[in-house]
Length: 162
Image (cartoon, rainbow, N blue to C red; front, side, top):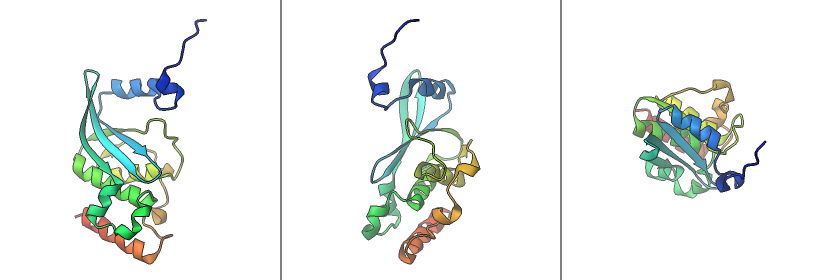
């Protein structure tokens, strides 16, 4: 049995090399999702000859350009914001088949990342995902939030679906 030293990015819980290799071998464009304490970021990435090329990128901050009220900027990490960000990315990326690359983010039922994935699927992208893991439709549409925020969410969603 040989002892191997783990790579630095694996020790810091930044990269799962085995998962990454499987994603790269599929040769399917992937949507890379990362979340912070304030925002969610995503990129459409294609890999050719071990080089990544970013085709488009989105942040939940872009919702302010779409009509999200600035006084609710603290809620740009909410489930509805993540869902709407996924809709915007789907509109930018165009049709096609994609793989989700969540990196080291844990896959938890009803999470913000899965709300983003539901937004991309509802936006028309072909992504293989388990529908039972998505958040409840009422939470995605902001039924648990203030009426003012619900109005903003509905306005942006109707604008994006046109």
